[in-house]
Length: 241
Image (tube, rainbow, N blue to C red; front, side, top):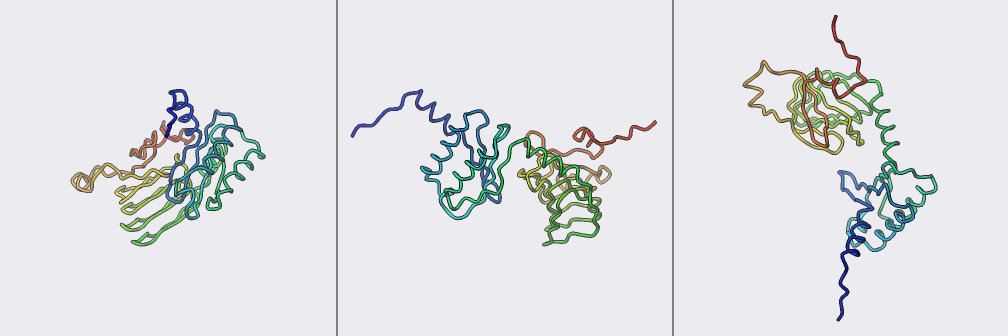
């Protein structure tokens, strides 16, 4: 039985085609990232071919939600509908959103400009506080308790549970607390823990200060709250007299 041997050029072409669409699994579904530079007809053909010929169980199994991201590419409404029609050919794919970097940035900036809502109390183990926007929480978050916000989270108290800022994908969101010792920190889809251990904090109680967590190049970073102006250039900064 004869077998065709691919040339280097053919292998490179196949590699380029496969890279037109990148699929990333997230907690509650999939993200389809589309190539920003190729011709639209070529991209649409690649989407259809991927869906028709894919043997991935994830594209032919139970119902799954997907978000489509097309980056800086300019798409007309008709072109978006063509992509949606192609994806809907797989009945198990539920398209939740389709947006480019500009629309995502506008949405993210709108969240960050949302006024800060103030709440007080205590989040105990097993409790989850959900909030749409930015939140200033006056109280403690105990181990096993969680705060989840689409925007920033500021806690005037101890964070010993879990905090998830930017829950709808905002990587510019932050988590700040008077005492930052969470069981888990999450910003957008990045999950981490602060670098300081409880032993280090207990041995240096005088060094306890308000800190905040933020993302830099996709990695979680921790800094003093006094340095937040380096990250948020639009803040009004008191410089004294």
